[in-house]
Image 1 (spheres, helix red, strand yellow):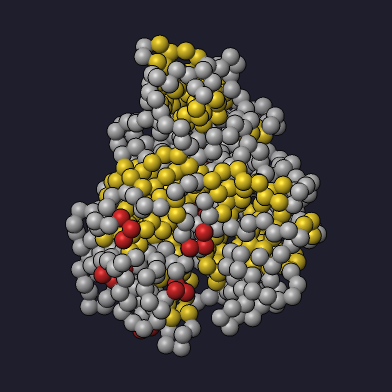
Image 2: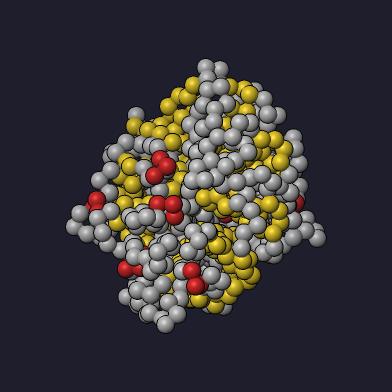
Length: 629
């Protein structure tokens, strides 16, 4: 893809340090020369991950100020520092007096914006220049705005005939930076579509999912090629389905799109999947750069007599080193009971092969899956909310007393307790009867630590470190109180229950809801508005298209669709920070979280990220390096 445009990035940085990883938290650094646990002798092989670039961004703040932000990679040595340069015409000047060793952002406060400028970030270890230089252009007379525009390609003459529901990031062209794959859903009739967009190039390609993206072939089940059941009469309860994800599944340096397909699906090159006598469903591997199908395999449906399967897609490192595709699928029998099948696939040598398949359910399903290393053996497990599958496809455990729920969260909630914990909420609708409104459990074993009292329908719940006076993350739900990790009520006032986001300059969590970000004031027991995105729309459950650490430093961005359905806007913080953390997509649990949708939930790391945190463990990773030229 051609290089860069105004105020986005011209950054190709691919350092391949195998003894690295730098985290500096307000002056806390790891010992000089220490070796990450990821690469200790005899440890598990490192995960093959995206070879991310610097993600350099430039945003004009007004008053002749420009805000710069860039990634610290999870593969870099601990002593890396940065220098910032501004090039105007043939003149290049260094902006910082001392090497930058704290936060990976910088504000240039003396800019002549009547001229165009190129900003340059160079990295050094012990005074030696490392890797490639990152550059970003800022055009003359730039707009004052904290978002990047991506125009949407029209499907019909009326833009409001379609809305963008979900988005997935992936490095489709291998340049080290994310492109975005989105689903577009009709509101006035028509097929559903999958499209790819670039921050710098705009529209890349489109896949038409065909008539069976909106048309059912039996009474109770989802359309066999759908990515959502919005607009399908009688199937509102299936709206959490996605059937798509984006990831570099064969570790060649470029991401693929993994998609459930059926007859009538038309790929970007015009090739159409033909009808089959068996009316088979498939998993298709799509080349992320072109939108052309690269491989296809038939889904084994253990309940084929009852109709097509639909569900969630995600990514798991089942051997600890290579990514695999997880497809958590279900259909509904005439009895109206759900039936489940969860196949895992590997993609190598141009072929997609089933690795294992788990039939049935050994616990309760929520509206999303979470995939991460629950038991700290270096391999990923799959959690469905009420139960979990081990890396070998066998049941790891079922959570006692847990029934149908909506949101659930797995991370290091309590830094003083070994391992990871899970916080989940419980619904009591549609015939479900729960024993408790929420639960707090050990993620590795399913052991319940404590539960709430008085059964009730709890539709939403979340967690974040919003009160630095208490160790660990706070937990709350629509049932009321805020709890600390010891189960103590610390407030009876309920903050937003939607998403946790890292937005301002500290390590406390902020709250993302609808089109705004809030900060919880723990002394006043109220929320303060930090940011509002104007002229944008949100999806059901007040969700954006996508959010996460997509560019710049470790803090998170939010992708919205505009109210007129004509463009996507990627919003970024412009608040300075001296906190230094390696880019969150280089954390295994966080990157897996970016690959799943369903009912969107907060993205979480596999370490405690909050007030009083210790240095996070170095990620056990190595980039899938290839020739980018």
